[in-house]
Image (cartoon, rainbow, N blue to C red; front, top):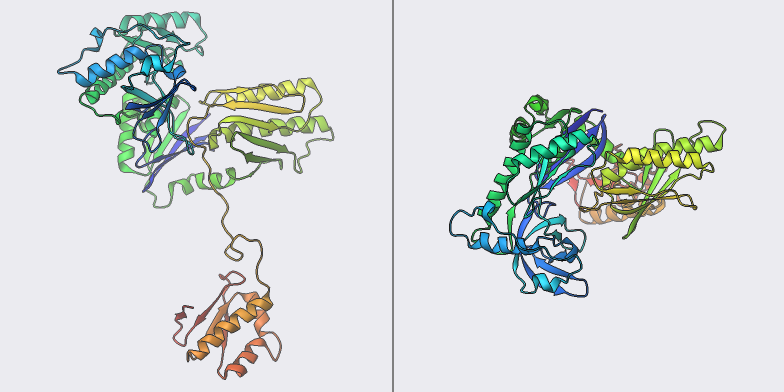
Length: 513
């Protein structure tokens, strides 16, 4: 599979398109003034405790207070509170290796027991603000690198479950145990498989350096304040996605090009040549076919190559996708037709979930199939198609009503692009004035201009209206000329929409009405 990243810098921010085998699968938009992104660390002030919800509202500088539930406090919440105070009040360099951790909190505790004093606390954005809700917070602080993730206040070592070889898991565990700093837990990511000690050590050192920056930023900080920002969307995507399948990164901005190239040079020097600067003059998204795919992929109806199509509807709590066969006909076997259409739809649905970043509950109404084997094939195919999705998700078996339920983690607002334009003729009503009414409207304006002593008038209209106004020996135009005692000229313009008309004076200058 070939992966390409197309990065379009515009005045409002940066648009990032991820293509897999030339097909658009992810679309991200990073605003120029982006804040409260997932992973950002803030010094927040606890404003309100809600014992009934066992949660707190924390001021992190957003217009609405952020939400922190007890289950997101982390077992090491007391250590985090102590660390926050010590780092804020530190006189000199604060050696984290000498930090004495506090006992863990219990899972079934109460929010008042931990945050009863309404202290300042270091928090991490778990979910971006969505609709009327403020950000969702977590105190389970983690700093992700390319090969490892560090978690302060514990000494745990964990290896990704996706690394199946027991020997490789033991090897990685042994390496991390030897290089791990005190008071840091380390989670080994899937990308670390096959990497040597030097590569892991370098990645770990970068994260420890970030933690030192965090400590420095906390010193004398006043809540609410951003303490440490997640990397830009571009570099965070490269960190998580860069592998041997990546074969091109195209950027249309010199600064982002340099930043991206430097980042690639740092994490994968052998890949730095895949970054290229686009300066062709035309839109980068148009050149690489992204704009066309966006227009075709968003909207209520999504057409599939075979003639089948999806209908995607949204409600507050869930998303509903209906699969329709359209004119698709693979064979005379109805069951086979249903399976083929459903498999094609499943691939597109997996893509749509990533592309639109749909979250929560997704209910899919596939075409009914009778054979249990075919239903099993569809579930297995759906799980396979969803493997490339980085968001946490679960695919549930098809119910007796023929519905498949998918749950998908919602981290940020859904990407919703309006691909339709308001018709300039009807202004979105679906109805236009009849030519009889249009004739009266033109004459009303003509009468007004003649009364204002305008001479040598020319009316420019759509060709169909031109034909209507000039047909016959005693045409409507001729009647107007006789009625207003001056020659009225008519011109046709193919660029006008049906009910559009404009008046011009004898100098061919438009008369604004």
